[in-house]
Image (cartoon, rainbow, N blue to C red; front, side):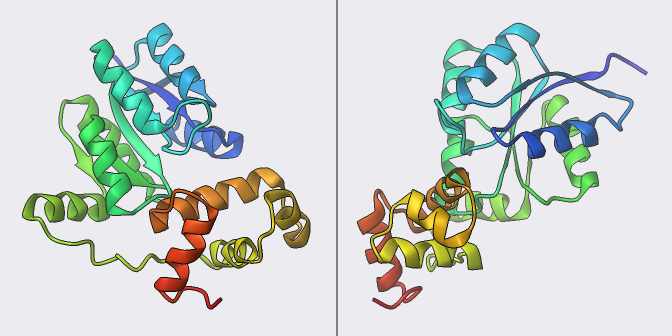
Length: 214
């Protein structure tokens, strides 16, 4: 067996990061050499460890995933990146691929798919989840995203309805019995799926798409 594939895992949720590391370490040809909980930390970890592959979440504090990808490209880093995220909208996928992602996987992907992506990307190939590959094909063909009406999770719809009531993150957290950090995560996800720039815009877009009724 040759040298192991060196990996850095960047995700701001410790449980997700640690779970992914534990899963990757089951493979004898993988070696996790670093971790990061923010975009800036991800850049520092890549600079320090010079990994073959970086696992990168898109929703990161300080510098988001696309920002990290752009910085790595500007720096001429040899590290190749697999985006590992919950976001499946064409806009997010295309932004990541255009910024230099060599792989795009959705959280919840089968272990075998994750392992295959690491080996493919480390070998110089690309591996996109079917939803990501379809988004790229649509962009090339100039076709519209068939998911133009976003699919929100039940929790995201609940948070959105609270936004429509004019509640802040702290109030929403208290009403739903969840942490303010979790509320921020759901709000960011809602914004991304709706293509919204702020709360009022998100509510207006959701009402127009008949996701909520005002």
